[in-house]
Image (cartoon, rainbow, N blue to C red; front, top):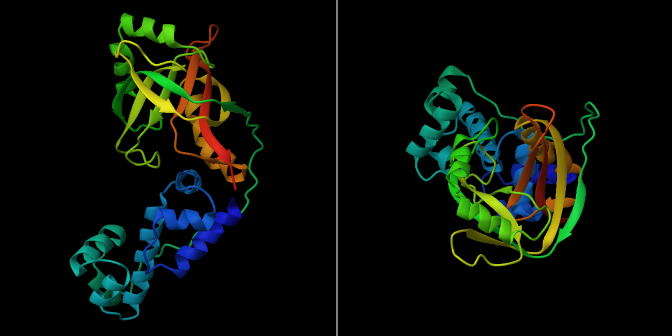
Length: 288
């Protein structure tokens, strides 16, 4: 995957003044847009869109430093107006475009190059499972994206589930893992940034439709799942494992993430307080 990422970086560099959509870039990488976004964010902590914007403003600043007119630079790098470019440049660099040449100062954002870095060898256990189509049946809510700690809105969602809904979930549950799962999908920031909202569902996996309409159902197509077990302090161990999936496992894996809900389940440790065993299920397919 490092080769593909560097290919994308080269393509961005050669086309900084052109339109660069996620679909266009993922086609150059030979992977899905979601997979490219997930891996890139996991490795860099920024989205592809943020990277492209930073590189454009960095190059725009160099041209301003060399005496180019603000109007010409704004149009060259895709801004519809000088005012829009001026606001973006000021937010990014802390200077007005007109001040760059006057002060002889510029903020640079170099091109990224992905290389292999050898870090501490921490084993990462996973398995691959195939599943037929099923439903996620449960209760859902829009909750704020949160990468660390306990999400209080998910806690409130769990507390709103009544006994009738619990009984209906238990009656429907007929597919492994036979656990109450937490599924996430429809994220406003595509799971890339700790902002916006996503849909969180607490429920079960089932092959049957809920009969009474008291539970929401999300159809999930037949696909392959990469499953990552983890054990430790909750929710820290689960969240660390999720971060490692995107930053460490996916870049070197023969799989890419597909558009489907990711889900997990957690079983409290009977011997250690605030510790648990969890599994994270990520929908994937073999890379072409």
